[in-house]
Amino acid sequence: MDPRRGPAARTAPKAGAAAPKASAQGGRGALTEPDVCPAVPAAARPRAQSGEPARAPGSLRKKSAPGPRERPPRRAQSARAGQEPSSAAGPAGPAEGPALSRAGSRRERGARSAETARPQPGPAELGGVGALVPAPSLGRRGAPPGAWEPRAVLEKLRLSRQEVSAAAEVVNRVVDHLLQRLQRRESEFRGVALLHTGSYYERVKISAPNEFDVMFKLEVPRIELEEYCNSGAHYFVKFKRNPKGNPLSQFLEEEILSASKMLSKFRKIIKEEIKHVEDTDVIVERKRRGSPAVTLLIRKPKEISVDIILALESKSSWPASTKEGLPINNWLGTKVKNSLRRQPFYLVPKHAKEGNGFQEETWRLSFSHIEKDILKNHGQSKTCCETHGVKCCRKDCLKLMKYLLEQLKKKFGNRKELDKFCSYHVKTAFFHVCTQDPHDSQWHSNDLESCFDNCVTYFLHCLKTERLEHYFIPGVNLFSQDQIEKISKEFLSKQIEYERNNGYPVFGEF
Image 1 (cartoon, rainbow, N blue to C red):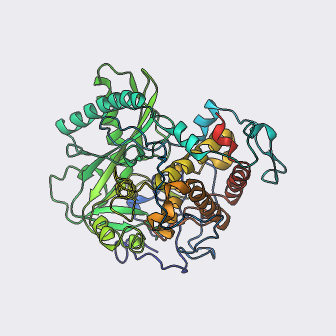
Image 2 (image 1 turned 90 degrees about the vertical axis):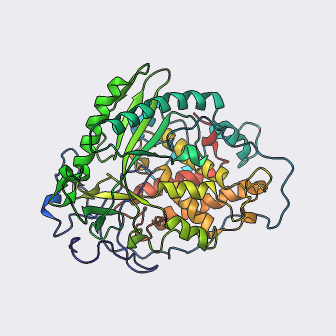
Image 3 (image 1 turned 60 degrees about the vertical axis):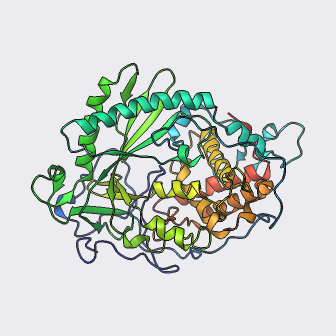
């Protein structure tokens, strides 16, 4: 369908109906798009890039799959409803450091994982993704099969206050310098401001404070969106009126605001300004193909990677593709949902996949700020996890899920099957479990192990059914065949099953 025809954004399909597939957010796996959409504006024709193997075009028709709200079978009861909180409190969350410009979640990069850790002895594989044979060396000494201690794992994941403070000081110095220089110089980006989101502010950052995300938002009033190939997630951006003097007019390609042109200029300015940062050894890393970020590498005193992401801020109504998304009515309430939907939405220069290249003029929706708000106020009760409130284990479950995927990616760093999986997949599945189990009594802190098992069960269900619905854009299936190959989902599913059946030995590795 010609994206230039009809409404700027189309209504998302209802549950059970055929739905388009597209890539979406945050996370970080490279998600694919349907093949070249007919009648794409001339200015937005793909500039095919070499060096990527040809990929079979994705279908716009959804395979038959369980409905988006279908509850998978449980492996364990989630909680004891109405149980009084235990007097033995679990370990506290990560120590809060200085104010930090959106510190983000750990990025999963296969190549980096391969350099830092070689695969350790694990479940022996028979015939590729075949049956798994337990490896005795992975079990905890003196522990019965299947025994593990989730609180001990969480304690290991706690961030050191000293490390967080040191990392925050360095990152803040670099980010503040760049922000001030951008706001002072006569450029198209004078109006940028910081947007604080990510796992640091969500209090779910794990392992080490060595990778951060920073979003520089730029308000763009009076824009209209044209949905790209019914994707629901990617859009062409146009100005409703383009008066003379609009600083962004130089980035227009036949009335379309070019994401690639704007990102290229943004990157050029960052490279110039980073040279003037004093007392810090920092460089701009080589551009990653398809990435919306400008990545900085702070090399001393410790290596810290910082992704700076340009985001367009729109204060108009959310696109129609999100109408059935954000299913928190029974969890956080209709009033909270309406309040969140009145917040702005953002567009980042993450291009849609098109054939063997990218549609470089497209922008992708981002709701990372809403995700932060949900995790910050995650309880059905207003006092959930407050100082004098009842503690739940929601965030602990998310941390363990993130750590499980992170450890598996380290263990199999040289295996391409895990390349496209990222922490955003885990977070999306976690949000759906919160929707299915909306009551605080279902997440009692004493039931951490069974609640975590419920999260694992749901994630395995998504892998096996090849369906993980985007939490904000229901028409987007993050686990569709054109997003992630079936063999990769089978491989990850078998590894998680092995870990669960053997007491998660991977938590004690690396």
